[in-house]
Image (tube, rainbow, N blue to C red; front, side, top):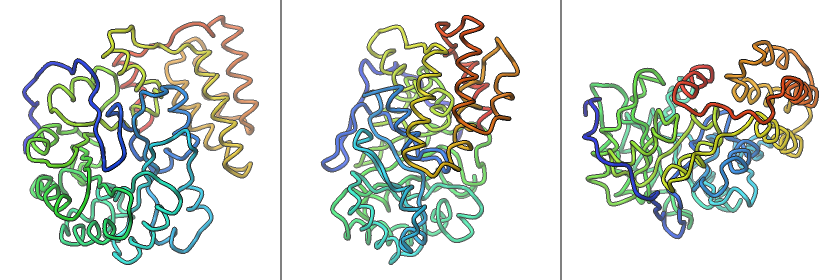
Length: 361
C-alpha cells in the first residue's frame, strides 16, 4: 500500500464508538501504549485532563518473561485504578506457553482487555522475536493469538505495524491471521518496523484494512491535534483512533476532539490548569512508586508540558536541575504567578503540538 493520501471525506458528525466483546469503547478514542510512559499515573493524568472523552487506555507493554517470573516491578506496571476502565494490558514476547501464562495473570488482575504487541520496533524487542518481529512470522503470531484467546475469557486484541519493511507490507495478511485466530480488534500503526518513528504514517493501510475487516480497526500514527483525529476518522472510516505522543504533549487532546465534534470551542488549558494536573500527577506518582522514582517521571512530564512556555525560556531547564518534584512544581507555579500568566491559555494549534512532539521523540 502506498503512502499517498486517502481520498478525503468529511469529518464525522459524532465520534464513533465500538465494542470489543462485552467491552464498549465510547468514544472511539484510545490512549496508545508507550514504553516508559503509559503507566497508571500517566493514564490517570490523561483521564483527569480529558475525562470521559478517553474511551480506552492501554498499559505500557509488559514482558511475559518478567511477568511470569513474578517480578515486582513488572507487576506494578500491570496495576491500574478503577477510574481508568476500560483498561487494556499489553503483553509482548514470542513464547506461546509463557504468553498464555502471562495472559491468565492479566485476566486475574481484572483487566478488561488483553492486547498482544506485534508492533514495537525496538531492536532489543524484535531481536527476541517479539513486537514487530512477529510480523516476520505470522504463523507464530497466529498460534499466540489462538492460544491466548482460548485460555482467557477477556477479549484479546493485537497491535501491529503495516509490515516489517516497504518490500514486505503484510497488514491485510496480519488482519486475516488475527481474525482467524480469535482476536476481537486490531490496531495498526501506519509505519513499517524499519521506519521506526520516521517519515509519515500511512493511513491508506487503515482504510484498506477497514474495508476488509470483520473486527474493529483502530488507526494510529501522527495524531497531534483534534483536527488530525477528525481528518483520519473521515478519511478512513476506522472504528477508533489511538493517540500516543500527541497525548504526552497535550493530555487534553481527547477532550478537544470531543469539543470539536460537539461544535464547542475546543478546550484550551491555562498554565494554571497545567500546574494543577502536574500536582495531581505528583500525588499519583507518590502513591504508586518508591520515592526515588518520582523525580525522574516528574522531570519527563515537566519537560513536555512546559514546552512553549515563552514567558521564561529558562523555566524548564531550571526545573530539570532540581532534585525534588515539590520544588519543581512550586517553582513553576511561583513563576507563572509572578509573570501573571496562570490564567493565560496555552496554544493548542498544530504548530505548538508538532514542536512539542519533536521534543518528545
